[in-house]
Length: 452
Image (cartoon, rainbow, N blue to C red; front, side, top):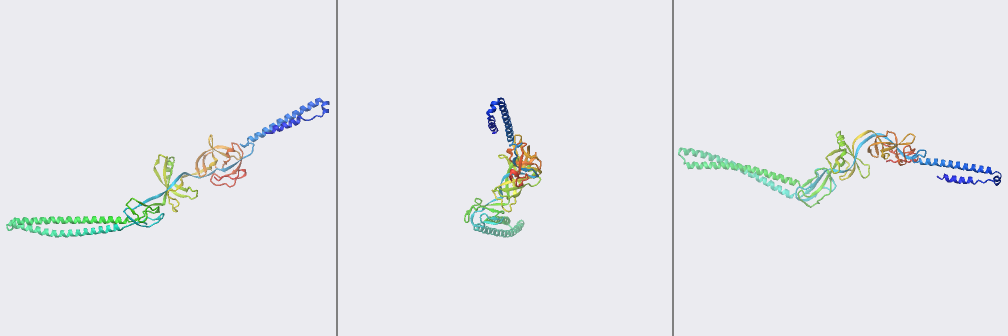
C-alpha cells in the first residue's frame, strides 16, 4: 500500500537531476531531450510500481480463502465406517422395586425393636414387638369358654339319653293303658294322662337334641374367637414382609400405637430396582417395534461424571401418553446386586433400540449450517477443500452418523471452518477420528486436535 509514496520520492529524485551549466549553454536542445527522457523513465517506473503493488494486494486479498496465498491451518478427522447403536437418551430416576409402609394392626405398647435404622432385612425378620399380655389373657379366656361349651354339649347329650329312655317307657305305658281302657279295665282319664306324659317326654327329647346342636355351635364360635385372638396375638410380633432396606423409625421404644394409623418404618426393595424415564411419544412406534423382537437393553449412568455403568432391560411401557408433556413413561429393571442405584437418584439413561451396520460417522463439530442446509468441508487430495452438503442421522456420543454425502475414509475439517471457502488450501493437523478414538498429536501448524 505504500508503493506510490516510494515512487513519488523516486520521481522527485529523477526530476532534480542536475545538468552542468556549460552543457546547458552549449546544447540547449540536448538538455531538453535529456529532461524528456528522464520524465519518461519516471512515468514508466510509476506504472511498474503500481502494477506490482496491485498484484501484491490481490494476493493478500485471496489469503483468507486460500487461492495463491498461504495455506489455512485446520484440524481434520477421518470419516469412519462402523456399526452404530441406535439409541434414545433421557434423564431418569431410580424407583424402588417395592415400597412397604409397616404399620401395627393392633393397639399396644412397643416393647422391642429388633433392628437399627438403615439395616438390610430379610423377609420374615422380626422388626417390632408389641406387649402381648392383653391378648394372651384374652386367649386364655376364650379357651375356657370353649371348654365350658364342650361341657354343656356333654350335658345336653346326657339329658337326651335320659329323656329318650323316659319317653320310650311313657309311650309303652300309654299304649298298655289304652288297651285296658278299651277292655274297660282302666279309666279313660288314666289313659289320657299317660299319653300326655309320653308326648311331653317326646318334646323333651327334641329339646335335648336342640341343646346339643346349640352347644356344638357355641363350641365353633368359641373356637373362632380363639383363632381370632391367636391372630391378634401373632400381630404382637411385626416381621419384615420383604427383603429390603429400612428407613427412619418413626415410633420409638415404649410408645403406644393404634391399629393402622402410625407408620412405624418404610422398607424399600432395591434388588432388583426400577429406573423410570420418559421419551417423546414420536419414538413410541420404534420402541414397540424393536421391543417385540426381544428385551431392549437400558444403560444407566450417574450424573456425577463417573464412568460407572449399570445394565438393565426395558420391562414396562405405560398404557397411555402423558398429554401434558407429550411423553411416554418407561421403566427399566436392574438387578442392582452391588446396590449402587438408590431410590430417588437421577441418572442419564440410554435406551438402545438396535444397531445400524456400516454407518459412516464423523465428529459432530465437522457439520456446519449454511443457507442450503448442513454441509461439511472435505479435504481433497490436493489439500484444497470443498463444501459438501450432507444428510445427518443419529448422534452417537460425540459423533454424528452421515446418511448421505460422505464416504468412509474421507478427510473432513473439524476446526478452522470460519477461515475457509470452497477451494481454500489447508495445512492439516489431525484431530479425533469419526470412530470416537483419539488420533494423537496433529502435524504442522494445525497442532493437536480435540478429543471431543
